[in-house]
Image 1 (cartoon, protein in one colour):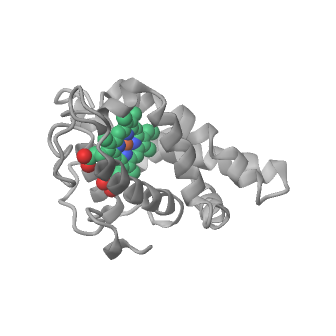
Image 2: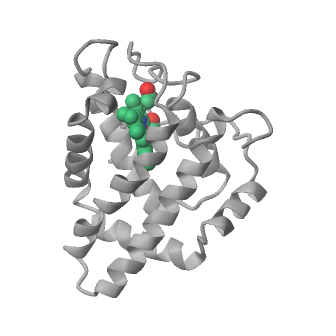
Image 3: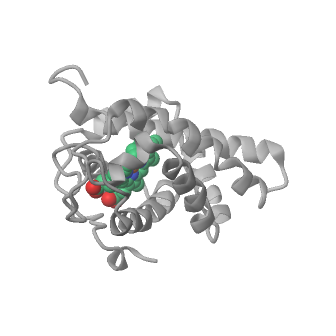
Length: 194
Ligand code: HEM
């Protein structure tokens, strides 16, 4: 599905990121993200196309199985909010495509800022008008880099015979996720310490 059909997906309409393009370039250098990684991600995007729902099944299964994670899709002391899970799932699927195919430019940087804020009290729950927890703790955001990366391998391997090529795409994916989680950490940190 393309952007306008996804409720709450505001790519291209997000407010200006406080992070500069120069800072983004430095961060890309820190994770060793190069043009080759961008190419590998485009290839990964082609391989993942058509498997996105299955990837989401795995990630949602992982979150659903852990009370301390699913709590952030629930009302305090309540059951998971089905509409919330579903709405975020659609945007999460688009995020996989965006991570693989979008240029990491000003528009992308602006939406990175919006995704970050949606995990914090500034914007969490706002998009889907729900009464869930006010914040996803930063420690879990960082920790999920592991499963978000590890679980992608079989989906790439299913469509790519060369183990070497799979490894290269895995590295590119890891760099892309680390880059984003580093960007998303900004609103959690003290002024001057990000
Ligand atoms: C929203 C990715 C960690 C809970 C989202 C969205 C994406 C995303 C793409 C939708 C953004 C949009 O609205 O367009 C990720 C990634 C993570 C991560 C890549 C780790 C590497 C976590 C963790 C939790 C979590 C650990 C805890 C359960 C949520 C919730 C929302 C959300 C509740 C909806 C926020 C809202 O109210 O708008 N995440 N996330 N995320 N994520 Fe995460």
